[in-house]
Image (cartoon, rainbow, N blue to C red):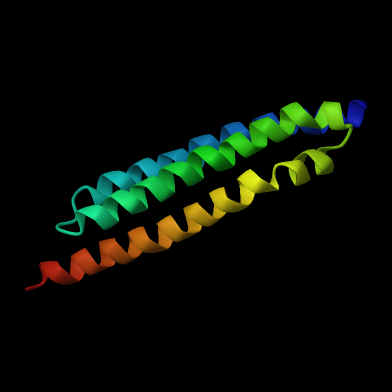
Amino acid sequence: MTATLDKSWNYYQRAHLHAGAIGSVVIGLCLALAHVDGRRGLRRIVSLLLGFGALGYSSFWVLAARRAPGLASTGAAKESLAWLATPSAGALAVGLVLSLGLLVASLDGDES
């Protein structure tokens, strides 16, 4: 049980680090997307994907840390929250690719 509690504490730390790092990058990307001309609807969708992914993925680690002692296993806690981790990570990946695509496309438009 002590090992599970120790690893659970590490999950809280991981949640904090993920929230800070991913959150900072997502805020920066959303601010950069605000300066892209046109494609307003697509920019909103990308921002929503990034926001959901950032919030969901860091929340996954907090929830896993809270569930682990009750399940007596950190692995079981992570498996029980796969429904949150997988879509969150996917939303982050899709949002990142789309935002980089929008930013590169806006750079090409500035040359004319």
